[in-house]
Amino acid sequence: RNGIRIFFWDDEDYPARLKACVDAPLLFYVKGDVNLDARKTLAVVGTRKMTIEGKCQTEKLIDDLAANFPDMLIVSGLAYGVDICAHRRALQNGLPTLAVVAHGLNNLYPSSHRGTAKEMIASGGGILSEFPKGTEAFKQHFVQRNRIVAGLCDACVVMESPEKGGSLITAGMARDYDREVFAFPGRSIDEMSRGCNLLIKKQIACLAESAEDIMREMNWEKPAAGKRLAAGAQVLQPSLFDSLSPEENALLKLMRAGQKYQAQDLLDLSFAQQEGSCARHIGEVLSTLMMLEMKQAIISLPGGLYQRRPGY
Image (cartoon, rainbow, N blue to C red; front, side, top):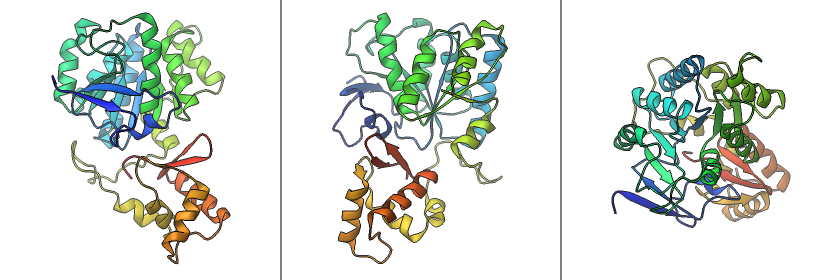
């Protein structure tokens, strides 16, 4: 109804990244046809009191990422400052962008961003909320929604933040979910840089000054010149499988999308396959899992669990 989809935790299409989080919502609502299991997903967050420098950094970051990954999903919170800047720059670059909001989908806060929200929905992005129709944007809801921003992403980037702010909470949640966290540094005397500097100082975030820094740390390979996909093009994975060893390829094929496995589970499945390239002891499974994680084909989860990365 009204173009709103409902996702339940046990649905097959519940986003894999979020499902791996211990406090993932049991259900949530989405307006728009956004792909929540996009191959690459980046959360871009920061202060509502964005400076000119912060605006320039945010726009350049998204420009450079879009030039290399035209299907990357940009996730933020539709708030003033860094959030809305990230959404709008993503739209200008043809990237899908998702806003996670702290109220029901029958209204929008802030209302001045209604036009941008409509454009996001019409451009392959969307608006997501775990709150039912009629729920207002209470203060405590903003912290609650931050965990969804953190849970949906591969990495979280804090562009600007004072020493205390919601974006630092999001960064902490992302770190707890074993996501990579990045922060753009600034001068110690600049109020809106103190939060980012603190994240770097406490080793919660990696220092980032450019898209290249993030791409390098995430092992996101830059496409060869002339081979970049057009926005909306289907992403295929033959190059990944070509780069895997027979043992890695065999183990990866045992892992169904969205399912979680312990090493022993995969060893049992491997024995059942009775193929020459399958693992025959637990040490071999663990070694192969380590290589698959290094190649970003799988995700390591708390409790000794592993999951096939969305898109592979």
